[in-house]
Image 1 (cartoon, rainbow, N blue to C red):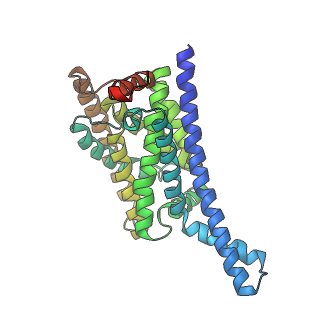
Image 2 (cartoon, rainbow, N blue to C red):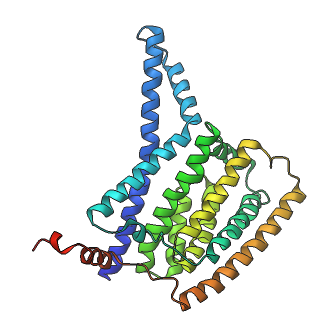
Image 3 (cartoon, rainbow, N blue to C red):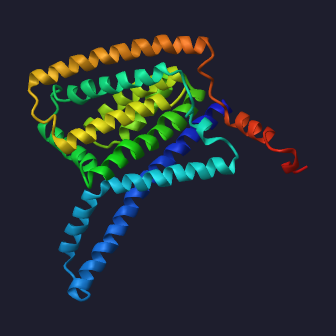
Length: 310
């Protein structure tokens, strides 16, 4: 029981690091923008300026540069992990299960990403959510995927956000919970935390379902890499779509057709993940996760004899 609580507390600790890094990224961004605006307005007005103008300019700048906050969060979050694992002399890639897996799972990741896009993205539009809720969701999507220069938005949403979220949620948090409880329970808790971090009520439901889909291939493949591919592909489609409006003039027939295609792709995804997951595990191609204590012992054995302090 002691080991179970140890893993739960470690999962909670990593969630705290993720939450702290994410909040800190946006706090740092807002502080920097506040200084920039205050200095500029003070220089223009000779030392005094209107607080309303200051607030409006800071808000506008912040809204247009939210993607920078994501990039800062990535640097903080991953940087803290390297410091922690470096101090403990363990392999950070093993700790988050970022390891090789049979190539078929990379193909399944593409199928899963397309299934998520066609099903999850469009099923929301046939569920009778209040109109005000959907309008606020669209505003939230545009503020995160279409703010700032396209290249910066692409870098933040397609590279930074998936890496940060997959390393923490499917790598560290799920990895620890999976050692402390049944896999299905660990998947549900991880996906629920992942959903809650997205804030908006519709986003919470969407992200929970998305988290369960990614967690499934993570369990079957023994690696976070296929899920990371799914996450990157889906975010890339979202960024391109929101910056170009290529999918803005769809009829209800298109939406229903997309939902059907997505459902079929996800059914194929789950079936094939199960089949190839069982095959890979039977052939020993999906290794069990390495416990922290075992990894520390392994790293110490690898040290040269002349470096060992007697």
